[in-house]
Image (cartoon, rainbow, N blue to C red; front, side):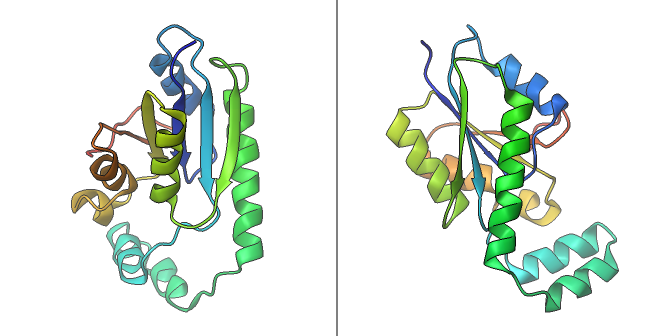
Length: 162
């Protein structure tokens, strides 16, 4: 059996993401572990700039006054995990998943080390500010692990610049 692959995602994985993950499984029997954070712990200023950079002015100002609801965030994470597990069903040596409490990157790093995973993958939507200034999850995980971390953009074949 191959080394496990740990996948951290903030978005429900889709058929396009399945194709990308299939290409990572060289011999077809690597177990997959999908991690979904219960709280993405975004920074208010970064989110504001992110929304403005995407020309989502109304959303930028709406998010300034939004309050997070932990129960709603956990429910959304559970939905994301269920959709992701369904999208990857039947791949590799089995697919399992967990919701990560606390910091997403710390959860990824801990699981990669605990499982002696062969690969770590981060799947996110594009974040212009974080990606530009290399403060994205993949870069942070790569710095902590000392290993390359593949950064894919959800629903596409595009690779992030980590």
